Image (cartoon, rainbow, N blue to C red; front, top):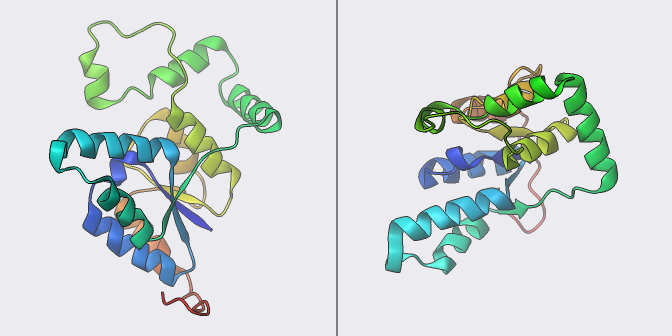
Length: 182
C-alpha cells in the first residue's frame, strides 16, 4: 500500500513529517514521483539560493523514509493507459477538452488566449500510475481533470492532507518490523 505525495501537497515539511510517521505506523509506504522531486528541488533551490543544501533536501526524504519512484512506461502499460483514456475521452475533442481542464486557477487565468492543442502533462501519468495500484492513494490539492477518476473512485483515492490523515488513522496499526521502529 502506497501514499503518493503530489507537488502541491509537498510544501509543508512539518505536515509531511507527521504524515510519514502516521503512514509508517500503518505500514503504508510514502512515495513521490521523480517529477515531484524535481519540481520541489528546483523550487527550494530557487527560493533558498546560496543557502540551498542538497544534502539537507535529500536527508529529509531519507529521514522520513520517503522513496522517490519513477513510472515504468513500457509498451504494455502505454497501451493499457491509452485504451483507458480513449474510453473516458472517446473523441479528439473530448481529449483536448480534458487536457484543457488540467489548466486550473491562476495558470488558466494567465492565458490571454487558451492554447489549442495541448500536450499531456506528467500529472496524467502519475494519476494513471496511482490508478494502476488499487491500494494506493495520492495527496493532491489539484482539482484538475487528470485526478477526477481518483477523486470519484469509491473509496476516494485523490485526497487532501486531512483526508489522508483520516484514511491512515482508519487502517490497523502495522506490526513493527525487526530492527526498525515505527
